[in-house]
Amino acid sequence: AIMLAVMKKLTYDEEYNFENEGEDEAMFVEYRKQLKLLLDRLAQVSPELLLASVRRVFNTTLQNWQTTRFMEVEVAIRLLYMLAEALPVSHGAHFSGDVTKATALQDMMRTLVTSGVSAYQHTSVTLEFFETVVRYEKFFAVEPQHIPTVLMAFLDHRGLRHTSPKVRSRTAYLFSRFVKSLNKQMNPFIEDVLNRIQDLLELSPPENGYQALLSSDDQLFIYETAGVLIVNSEYSAERKQALMRNLLTPLMEKFKVLLEKLMMAQDEDRQMALADCLNHAVGFASRTSKAFSNKQTVKQCGCSEVYLDCLQTFLPALSCPLQKEVLRSGVRTFLHRMIICLEEEVLPFIPSASEHMLKDCEAKDLQEFIPLINQITAKFKTQVSPFLQQMFMPLLHAIFEVLLLPAEENDQSAALEKQMLRRSYFAFLQTVTGSGMSEVIANQGNVERVLFTVIQGAVDYPDPIAQKTCFIILSKLVELWGGKDGPVGFADFVYKHIVPACFLAPLKQTFDLADAQTVLALSECAVTLKTIHLKRGPECIQYLQQEYLPSLQVAPEIIQEFCQALQQPDAKVFKNYLKVFFQRAKP
Image (cartoon, rainbow, N blue to C red; front, top):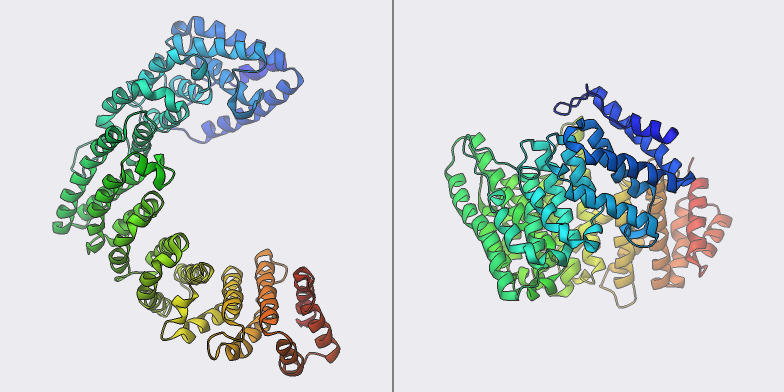
């Protein structure tokens, strides 16, 4: 009885406004979630009863769907959809194992795809149909004969060409999931599907009056789907390369034309519209590459050349003086993807791209550029050492120039941007030192200035995330340079600046030991002190005992205790001690 009541309550009422969902509609969606939880509980009590009830409602409704009200058809399909979570299995294996359940679900799925209900003239039924076929994609491994029927539903007026933008949008996403899940079973249909989606791949020019079927966000899914179809196909490398060229050449051609138009555009709105369109073209090309997991797969498909052509087409946008932020952001994302797909083949393009991206940039530009350099540094390590040597100071100049810009006292967003940029800067130094390229820092004329910025980051700014990174950099540099054969003057720097930083930072009132991020920063501070002790030995203990700690007015017995904890072989003991030490030391 409860089960039937839940099924009834799940049904939409006549007043529900699908075109313009407001507060009442949101409340009903929330109510449905509560009912779903109740249904899941009932399933735990009696899975057989739930399955039988849903099957009965589903079959009765779908036998006469043409003459049944939309809300009853929708709820019947919805119940089938909900069974997947109410009767869970691992990895969506609903059609194997328990025979009774597998047979029931298989029968219902067969009815769903053969009954013609996908043609029902109501968006809620259409959407529920597509959601359900995607949720039970494993059904098509058991009965692959139904794949063409469902593909057609996706591709025609029921799906991607539906009159409702909401249905088109959701279908674009679901279609990409459906194609990915079927993988090799899509082989017989690839060329046909690629031909049928051709018009949906068109880049909508920002000319007045042209209304594309899909938004650019939806088109991303269609491009990804096209990429997946080509890459996962059983075609030869030559055929795959030809198909990928067909997919990407129109984008490259449009890109060149639009970039020329942008260079000449006077009106700012027009400039923005063109820049957005250029950005979409780059984004679409990026998205096709998601079908590849690494360079190996790109090479096997013979597609490296196509993507290198894209790079050469897109990079000139970096020197465009108009709408810099939008264009740079798109090209940067493309470079991130190409580092994964083309690996070292990208390297020749990086120096000039970096040079352009460092021209007239703001905090946000730099903040987004640094992860690109980090990715290159971490991936190629010493291979990019010459490039890093050459780019290191220009990058630092650009960063410091932005950080030293005067800002209004109450300008919260400027302060936050600077904080984020500072974090990115330290993350960059951490990547350089952690990738075994500390010589890049050592070879700079003003290595001392760089080191002082790290000390400053550890002590002066109340930002535990940046402080943690600074201590990681300091302990790495001590590990690399802190021994007897380190660079001249570094041992001095350790005692004059790094050791004091390890005390001055935690002693600050802003260093809140009740905060989780701050505790992590303290933990890295402990690692730094341990590393100094490891590299400098008894000399470090002597300096702490006789010079530094007495200068902080620490009592002799506590100095003794501190040095004993530092000499413990178990680093954890010292980390715990350090927290207690600073808790006691703070007024």
